[in-house]
Image 1 (cartoon, rainbow, N blue to C red):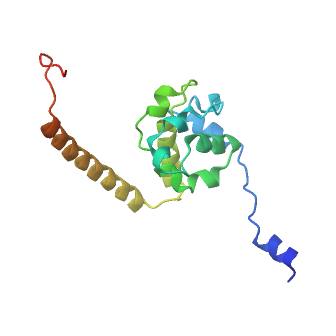
Image 2 (cartoon, helix red, strand yellow):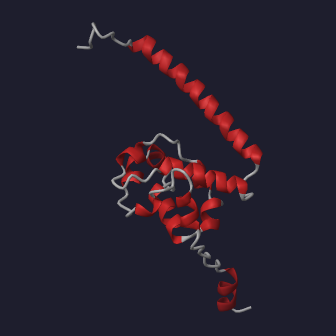
Length: 155
């Protein structure tokens, strides 16, 4: 086999676009403003996950939805990284509700067989443990540094 044939053989197939995908996502509660996105990047700049996970980009995920890349989006681990903190949502000039869109995509991924139900249960366990850990850290911080009452404002 020649180098050219090997390169052609190992080349990735281009993604197949599904023009209905963006409409399906936009039709779900929370996805209504999806198509208003003009890719300003405010979502990604606001995102705490993007600060620590260089491959995570809400803007890229929205762009992939708008391009109709259903398989690539629903099979991507990136749709599970969103913390639903809503920083992106409150800063978005187009009122795109990214955390809601992530919920829609996760449901579509689950319904479409892209993930097992056990995976979702494991994520719920992680979320619960994270909240418990946060509560303990916050409790320690309050005990150590104190919180002033309304009459004892910090100086």
